Image (cartoon, rainbow, N blue to C red; front, side, top):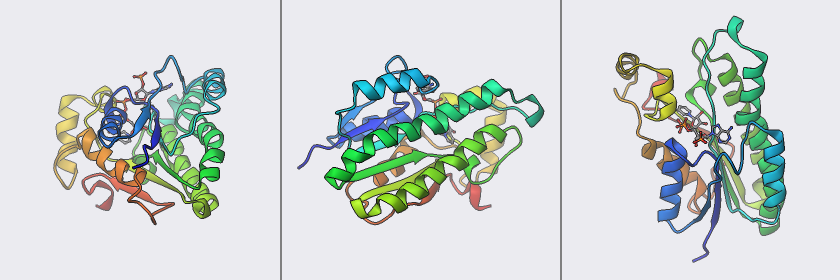
Amino acid sequence: MVRRAALVTGGSRGIGKAVCEKLEALGYTVAAPTRQELDLSSSASVEAFLELHKNDIYDVIINNAGINDIHDIEEVTDDEIEQAMQINLVSPLRILRKFVPAMKKRRYGRIVNIGSIWGVVSKRGRVVYSMTKHGIHGITKTMAVELAEYNILVNTVCPGFTLTELTYKNNSEKQINHIERDIPIQRMAQPAEIADAIIFFAEDRNTYITGQLIAVDGGFTSK
Ligand code: NAP
């Protein structure tokens, strides 16, 4: 069997960590750069990483790292807009631009961009986050169209509420209990449950799904 290579951003914890563990268990070689090796908020860091790894070949790219600061529109700062755009949208696009040519040459690629339920519906305070998470699906759709003939399949997985540090940072325990009552399945997801969906779209067994947005949200966006 071919040993496939994957690049996963934000692999240190949460959903990204679960993805790395599952890919490794499946026999993939996984590159999960630390923040010191690749800081998506810094254009210079992204540039340096891409230069250092310009000859690397990845079969799979998972754009997972993301931030979510919550502010109503009047409170949003320029710095917050800039940071979220860089981390959630611009740097993932630059990474894809660098590694897609090698995928095209090998006529194989599986790309999974991580969106959010707030890239499907929205909620107050999510103006910047929703903008970036809607945007990432734009990247998915265009690249799916451009790259399908090269057997490069590109999809967006949109997690619902998942029990990671991001969720604990943005919600108190009381709020978590309250939210859980609002999810049809009546609980938040474990990172491994989101990772399972991501893995499907990253693997060889996905042969025909591309350009799609899949919400893994316990029914939240179907209400
Ligand atoms: P998390 O637990 O907060 O972990 C975020 C990951 O992103 C960490 O590995 C972190 O690295 C990395 N990261 C953040 N800023 C970075 C930067 N500037 N450069 C490089 N890496 C950076 O997040 P999560 O909850 O697993 O979320 C993963 C993805 O799912 C995100 O795109 C998020 O928007 C999306 N999502 C999550 C939920 C949820 O409920 N948790 C719901 C919908 C969508 P460090 O360890 O160095 O900080």
